View 1 (cartoon, rainbow, N blue to C red):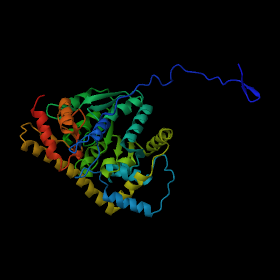
View 2 (view 1 turned 120 degrees about the vertical axis):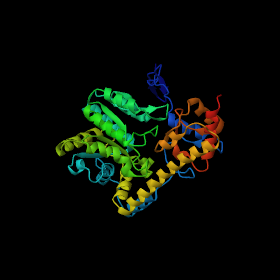
View 3 (view 1 turned 90 degrees about the vertical axis):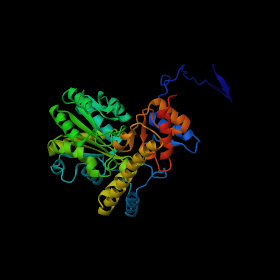
View 4 (view 1 turned 135 degrees about the vertical axis):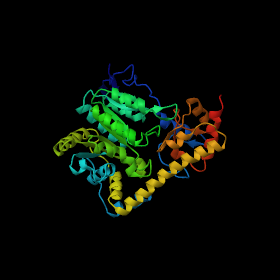
Length: 422
């Protein structure tokens, strides 16, 4: 059949029709449990609402905090008139050197022997992704063991990279503390040469860390089992207020001869959440082995994201290469850690003051940004519906969301939902 257009006969355009879309089998996925808390919080119009889900530091007024040392470093970078050219695949070298030295210490033997490879990563998540991809490529079939519970992204990152992942016992819900015997037995039972992921400090989500004596026993066990240890180090300085104290387990393992992998984030301790600045390090047995590892990391990173952004790296390296700015950073990171510690103490004080007879000592015994309160899912639901207080249903709260203005209100609400059955 033809149609007449002006003086010409025109054939119709035949289009193929599809009965269903090629994406018809894609189903809607579940909301991220943590981001979902923020969504619910944002919809709430109550003036009393509190968001205890987001893992970002807030000041006493509940506002994001920009470190003064970061402002000064920003000014220095601007005045230097830097360009915006690509960084190398491994990132900004001055940042890489500063990052790994901050974690391992200036006197680290492996650093002096040039056996450590460090590449810039897209924050801690990106560092873990590079780590998992490297493990998948060069330790195929080896299972990674993560604590139960752990940060939600750990399981997903390993699984998406094709690394088998299992969990080991970690948390004891009976006392809201560490189940060290269960942890030790599970790591001992794992096949020789497994990947063992450890939170260096301020365990997320529980805030429960091993003691130094327990760390030493874990180190010895991992040596005996020939396990490959991967440290997730997201809170250096932010947990205790001392970068050296928070780095003690990592430095101990390295000094004991473990050729660890290390994932660092500078989101919390430098307040650079949106800059996505992190680092991934691997320790080899020789300088030549380190060179080979770096070459393979470049090959892995190139098709992943080609090269990392430079701005966050410039900020961190500017601060850590300047004596005065480093001193100011140390002061500010201690200020943030101390505020969180103080809010823990205030929360327990008000819980007792308002009549709670429960043992809340775990709130002050735990460390870092997060606290496993021991609240049930039903109690969490009541906090949201009756008091406009939002946290994840596992009872984890971000201590950074507590302020002098809302801590007593939070304590009253927690006492109410834990002392009544409904």
